[in-house]
Amino acid sequence: MNKIWLSSPHMSGHEQKYVQEAFETNWVAPLGPNVDGFEQDLSRYVGVGHAAALSSGTAALHLALVMLGVGQGDVVICQSFTFAASANPIVYQGATPVFVDSEWETWNICPEALEEAIKGERAKGKNVKAVIVVHLYGMPAKIDEIIDVCAHYEVPLIEDAAEGLGASWQGRKLGSFGKLNILSFNGNKIITTSGGGALLSDDEKLIQQSRFLATQARDNAPHYQHSQIGYNYRMSNICAGIGRGQMQVIDERVSQRRANFAWYQQAFEGDDRIAFQPEREGSYANRWLSCIRVDVTKTSGVTREVLRMALAAESIEARPLWKPMHLQPVFEDTPYYGGQIAQTLFDDGLCLPSGSNLTEEDLQRVVEAMKRTLG
Ligand SMILES: *Cc1c(COP(=O)(O)O)cnc(C)c1O
Image (cartoon, rainbow, N blue to C red; front, side, top):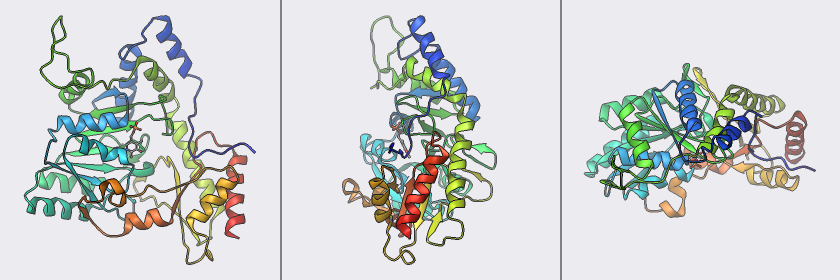
């Protein structure tokens, strides 16, 4: 039996042309025509003024924090229900992450709890330097409410749209709402450059500054001169070539992922043991991963972990939803605002195989294995 992966790279066939060009012209460097082209593709597609192609989504987030002046002793508020890469760069800067719970409608950061966090931290005398919202699994967060809270308290918003490329809220693409926005092109994301990320903003100066910092902050001089600490965070022209090929099929990839979700949803229609991640009116999720919740009060003991292991025994990769940051050993002593929603999602949630390259037979196999386990 072939293995069914959670989310594996899906090449379109267009990538090699750009990679080939890079070889033929010897642009095998962290700059070149593919980097420029990929940046244009991204800014045009997302509908944001400027983009910098970088080595990873984590690097993009790190540069965003550097440019917002986040430093020692500052506080950055971050959605708790996310991947560790959303929070780690806060610590790289010597700042303290403060985690906030999710809400049920989108599973992303709760605007009310966010406001509590800003007020609570300010009352402690903390300098709240930024807010990081995450569109987890490609589901738009309550972005209008979050923007309102950030505007009211004058805190800049960073959108972690690493999982959200191709999704939109009221027709506007995710990755275009924050002062700075990040994308990831890691191997398991909706499109990949084998590894990479991007920083997006309407503020051209910030994007120019990020390109400067990402190439070791070299001053304009014939020798190597530096007035600031820099980073080696640029994307290579080879990886950007893969990205250009992938951007040609981004809309197809989103449709394929949404079709996977619809397939699962239909297979469990009327089965109240399984609930699906909701999609609000006005949201267009990319369904990067198809996420379900298992209602253990109705499954006679079949937990999400029992289900996951049963699938694993049949060479099907499923994974628990992200373990919230406030429950991670490394963030044990970090402040947290909110209740039990993120924790509940982790306790009963499961990501099903979701690649855009899954066949109907693959999906059928997953559903059959699940139904056999659930009985
Ligand atoms: C993948 C991911 C990142 C990090 O991106 P990398 O390119 O792997 O560094 C950040 N945030 C979220 C929510 C992600 O899923």
